[in-house]
Length: 277
Image 1 (cartoon, rainbow, N blue to C red):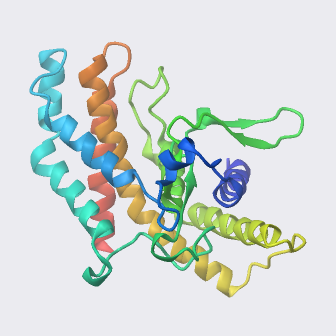
Image 2 (image 1 turned 45 degrees about the horizontal axis):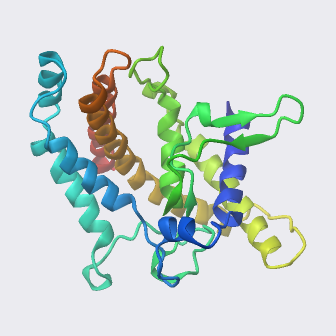
């Protein structure tokens, strides 16, 4: 629903701008102990899940083992994971693609780690609540929350339109529900607008009305370019998560391998699309 999507854009922007992790162990865990450099756990997590997935020689059933072999983790997935990690984490002299854009993402003036904020990281339908009387959107279940690129949170929300994680869906995604280019653009415009409003309030200014001018649309377009890269990263991230879940829990209650297969297939399809442009 388009209206809900724009409300989520506003709520996500507020989270990214306003939420401060309290000082102490929790803050150190999410942001690292060096106050000048915010640590992003995404790449370590991706690398760790890749290594874990490679370590399983067999799964709970021969059928599961056979299906995972078809994913070609070593030949097709690992090179992609390594490529993204190296392109995002190389030193500044190595033409780093930091995943940042010039868009108004809260904290985008914090140097190299611009665009890094406290993210939800798992915004699927079940984690978005609407109050029955006020209609206000609330984001819940921060189990995977942590410092990350704002563009990853947006990419995750777009990808989750395809579903697949509910028990009755059993890993079957439907990417015809993925937001079209216009819907993605509207989301990013609303996100940038709310970010600017939130930043003016944080600066002690009264809440200002933000016009949808050429500059703002330009920032939203830049943000969307960054989101497009994280749409790919996000497929690898949850695909590997699902492979590891299948190894640990099996696929009787939920078909994690079907889900992983669908996420990796969509990764390959989206990557091919990007290469055509």
